[in-house]
Image 1 (spheres, rainbow, N blue to C red):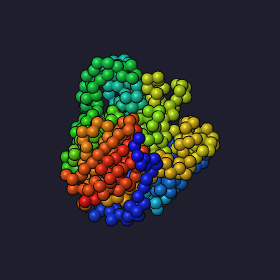
Image 2: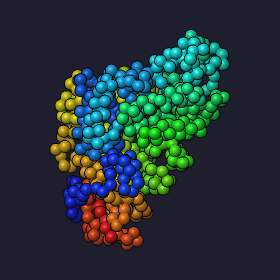
Image 3: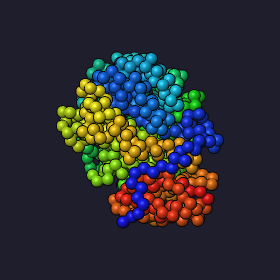
Length: 566
Ligand code: NOJ
């Protein structure tokens, strides 16, 4: 039996008292020349589901503003809010009908200003979601565009003749299971949409579109926002000749032939648009985050721009598809860290099944959630947390098609059930609907909310929430976690993934047991110039150390974080 188990959280309080020399908060460039967003912890908020101030079952801006204290205490430096602009809500806000206003469902511009000032007074920056690829079909630009073939905005979207009655111009398909071309009887042409028919694609080849979109960002920068998360950047441009995409073997989840989207996705022109958006961002010292779905690390690297003149923060979404193993994670992080860009780590979001659900094995679920926190919050790079991850929220998937809200889930049921499961209300208390509202919420709260909620977890030193808070405290205060490089150690271990974050004369050692068995890891940092025998434990879950950090014993999915000196 392994000895000296650290069954809960062990925290070296002395280290937490350390006052950072570096600017972990949003005060611009630090002593090492790093801009604020390299030290910041980002947090994604889905406004419909975060906090409901008027108790109508849908979250709102006043609700978000009221939770700044909670976010601050968690260790959040910047919030990215998914769209809350006027919208018919076909795609829950990703169909914007006015980029420069607030949907009354979420509040008013005064509420937004209040949210911003609350955020600012808590040292939290505000990042908005910019839906660059398409608008709503109710946007005034599209209403004008569809009104006649000669309207001022006709060429702001992609209109083409069909090949004959009922036959669109080419074989492209919408990713949401519908055709990609919709016929408009009034002007007898088809318009193109990569997403729902209510989300017509903008024509980024038209300079007027580009200018209008750049001006949208200026509008918000002037109102104090610190940057944007750019939605669906891959699909900004289409082949001007509209070639058919090659058909691939097999069928997609909607039963349609698979295709290689080479003519309507990831065209090289995308990078020109990103450069333009970045130029404007630079005028305001803003940061751009990208929704960058890539097939490998080198493709991800392209989004930084050959002269670091595109996105500062393209999200690594590849991590979410990796096998859950020490080897796969070590290999991926190694590739990303050495690729030259600043890594951005994400373990779930409003389109991806929650990490708790993806990795739970039914036996060690909470330990796995802590393992993930110990992992992505201690890497070199910026993490983006998804709301609720910090309390172990899990997917609450619809059981019947008629309960589904997300249209793609109704179109694709039962193979594609949509994204409702990962978008349910934040779990605040043990009260009705987890304290989100007392009326019926727009999506149901799972029974697990009785245990997994902020109020309960704040009282339990061993909770997932307290583990997140403790890791984030370390992340903000320990110089090696703030500034250190990344170096994998014990690289032959197939079960335990370990690495150092090294900074000057100190380092942090992170040891992660990715297996469901007890493991031991032995360390000797002679080569790296650190004294393993003098290591001190900073934080651990289901792990203990002997002889400093010479021997670390881990229960299944245990995490150890320790401090090394020379
Ligand atoms: C990506 C967003 O994250 C997703 O929620 C949305 O449905 C599509 N883009 C279309 O805007």
